Length: 151
Image (cartoon, rainbow, N blue to C red; front, side, top):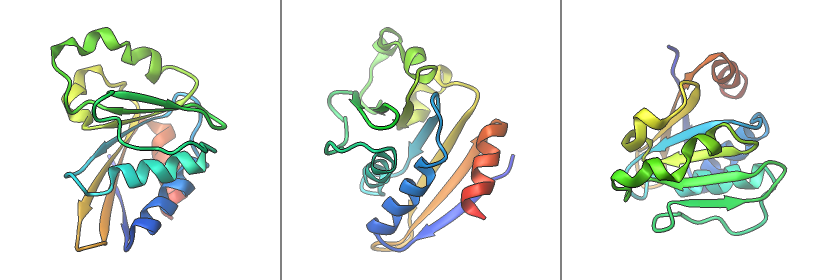
């Protein structure tokens, strides 16, 4: 499997990269986000939301688990960090197979619930405002997407 990397040097640049990525997303797209607290997961998601036309303020769904936003595509923003064993009742499949874009923070915690095809993004701090974003595509559509946006 190929892996792609992007370096951003500010929160604005991280948001701009996500906004650019959003232009390539289609209904049913699933993105997973990993990274330490403060690495830029919510900044990334805000840029993605802007790119799909969401006008509401986007913030982390830490205590609500799933937040839904409307844009040219629905955006389903999940933070599964605080989930216990009751996650099977949340109907993740309906989101993953739906008409929107799903972003899952801390996705490794629900690994067995994730679809086989998705785009995994890990955000690493490389300094105060520099971030290294590693993209790992699973499936042909995400491999092609990465080739488009990282070239």
